[in-house]
Image (cartoon, rainbow over the protein chains, first blue to last red):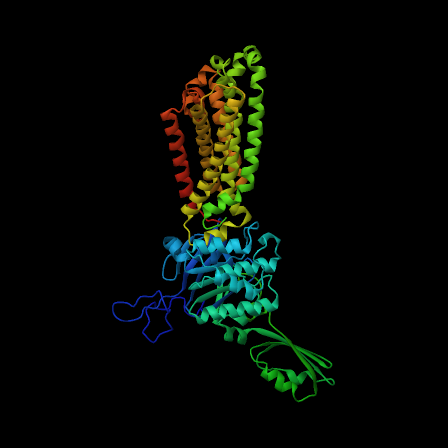
Length: 334
Length: 264
C-alpha cells in the first residue's frame, strides 16, 4: 500500500494549501481555512458474510478534482460508492462525505450529492420529465429548467416512458438527474456505460463544467481510457483493495503500451536489445513488437536508424495497467 | 398529476389498479346483493340445514340468519371483503420496499435527499390511501344497493364494518412491510404475511368450533375485526384500539428494520 499518496494527509491546511471549496466550509475561529475533503475513506471495509467486497480502502477526493475509480468488474467499486451514499453500511473503517458521516447526516447530506448508480434502474412507466419532477421536488426544487437544458444537450426525449428508451438514453436520464441540480459532490458509477462516443464527449464537458464550479467528482470505471480522459487522479482497486492512488500522468507513465513497428526491410534483433522501458520485445523479420512502460522514446530512437514503414500503438487496457503495477494479473499479488 | 412526493408517486402508480379493484369488488358486491330479494325467504331455511360447525367456521352467526345484516355478514363481510382488502395491502406493502429493492429502483430513491423512514412512511400511507379509496367505494356501493335491493342495514353500520375490515387489512399490510424490510424479498414478505393472516383467520374460525382454542380467539386480529359483529353493533373501541395499536407497532418495527439494513 506504499503507493497511496495521501490517505492520511493532515486534515488541517494553511490558507495557501490546496484550494478550498467555494461554499459550505465555514472559516475556523482561528482565521485558518479548514480543509475538508469532499470524500475521505479510511481503512474502509465491507464484508458480506465471508466475502470481503471492500477490504481496507483509504483515499480522499477534494473539491475541484475528478478522481477516477478504476478497477475490473467486481473489484468493490460499487460497494465502496454505496457506502458513500449510505445505501450500504461499512463493516469497519471510516467514511466521511463533505465533512460528515453519511449515516448521521442522512438526507441533508444527500441534498449536496449527485449520484449515478452503476446498476441504474429507473421507474420505467414514468417519463423523463416526470422523473425529473419527482427528483427535483425531493430536492425542494420546482424549476426544471436545468434538467431540461441538460437533457437537450445530451439529446434525450423527455416525454416518453423511460422504459421505452434505449439503454443509452436511459443512462442519459440517470446522468441528468445527478448533474442538473448542481451538487457539490458527484458520485458517478460507470456513468458512460451505454453512451455513444459523441455523447461521452458531451458528458465529459458537463463533468468539467461541474468541476470548474468547484464540485468534487468520483468517477468509477473499468475502462482505463475513460478515466484517462476525465480524471485528474486515479484510485485503482482490485479485489477489494487499493493498488494505487496516482495522478493520471503517472499512471500513463507506468502503463504498458504495445507498439508495433514495421520496417522497409529486415532489422537485426541486436539493435533493440536492452532499451530502457521496454519490457518485452520480439523481432521477426521486418516487424518489431514491443511492450513499453512509460516513454517510448528509446524504442523510437532505436527504430529511427532504419527505414520505418509504419508505427502502431494501442492504448494499454486495464490488465496492462495491473501488469505495470504488479507484474502479474493474478489475484493476491499485492 | 404532479409527482412531487413519494406519496403522490405511490398513489399515481396505483391509479389503474384502483379502478380495476373498485370495479371488481363493486360487481361482486352488487351481484351478491341483487340475489337478496329472491332468496330472502329461502335463505334462512337453506342455511338452517347447513351443519352448525360449517356456519361457525365461516363466521356466520345463526342468530342473524334470517336478517339482511346476517346475509351481508355471511356472504361479504365474513371472508370475501376482508380477504380482498388484505390481498391488496399485502401485495402492495411487500412490493414497496422489498419489491423496489429487487427491481433495483430503490437505490436511486435512497440516494435522494429523503430519509428512509420518510420514504417508507409515504409509500405505506400512499398504499393506505389507495385502499381507502377502494374501501370507500365499496361502502358507498353497499349503502346505495342496500336501498335498491331492500336490505335493511344502516349506513353507519356498513361504514363501521367496512372501516373495521380496512383496519384489519392495514394491519396485515404493516406486517408485510415489516417482513419486506427485514428480508428484502418481496415474495417471501408477501408469503409470510399471507400465512400469518391465514393463521389468524383459522384461529378465529376454529375457535368457534373447538372449545380448546376458543379462549385464544381474542388474540386474533380477525376477532378484533369481526368478533363483535360490527355490521350490527358498530365499532368496538377496544378492538379498534388493538387493530390500530398493533399496526403502529408493526409499522414502527418496519421503519427500524429498514433504517438498519443495507438497502441493496
